[in-house]
Length: 136
Image 1: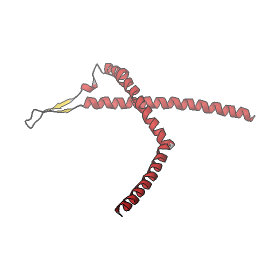
Image 2 (image 1 turned 60 degrees about the vertical axis):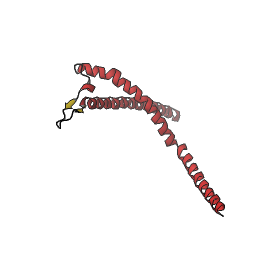
Image 3 (image 1 turned 180 degrees about the vertical axis):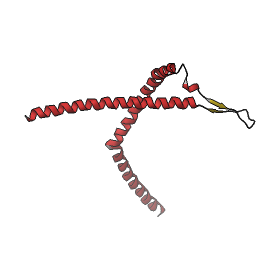
Image 4 (image 1 turned 30 degrees about the vertical axis):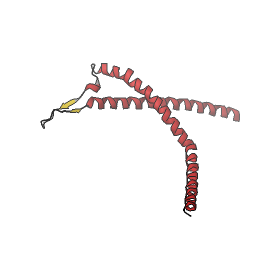
């Protein structure tokens, strides 16, 4: 008798898992999920390119303009007033570096989107001109 109840429970679990599995497969196969996955992968690759642009090209120029200052080295050291040997370090230069990187990344993305929009407008204008010619 206990085995028949166990078999019934196992059948119920299998039915629930089957429905869950089908629902999960439907979710994964939606276009938006696949698009998101592609966007994350491309974004990861794009991040490496933008980081290289910022760290290897732009920041050395900004550092030269700023008199050779490496922002990452800027910090404020606060001694321990409670008698310990440790100090508190406020690395405000690293914060400045991250803000500059963010602004550069935002600018690069803006320029790419702007170029893509310009290309799309030209395509739309050509398609509209072609459509107008065919109507005449």
